[in-house]
Length: 103
Length: 103
Image (cartoon, rainbow over all chains, first blue to last red; front, side, top):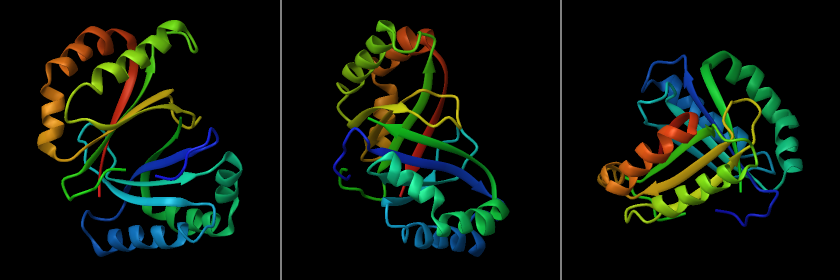
């Protein structure tokens, strides 16, 4: 885990896809998400997780760390993120929940 | 972060308390949760987080890592966990959602 200042944020999104579980389309979405979002400079420690608890309705998780709110804002506003959301996320994600952790 | 085998699990629970935000009762719950749950031997890297996203309805997070499902089960069944759930969690937590991440 990166050095953590008071500004540090652990951003996580749990989600389920419209694609069939275990499908090539699912694998491609997860791979593309990692490739595209990790190319945004303020993103660190990007993780692709399987969400395995049966106590919620989500099957995947992306998690990433930001050194500050400014870095998080830069990610949200970055053209690669905006494009990924409009071209992939909004079309392929069935439902999701965002979680932001601070120390 | 600990060494991560295929068995590794990152368990997280996001929750809101019945207590007033910023109250002594809130502070005590978070402190007691950390103290009690970290005394269970299979728990590692326990974290108490503020959940700051306005896109969900939870205000706090506990996160912890387990080396395996067996270690996770041992935590769930541990008398200190069972007692914490029945004596504190069920009385003081308003709502919660559990998330389990695997690599």
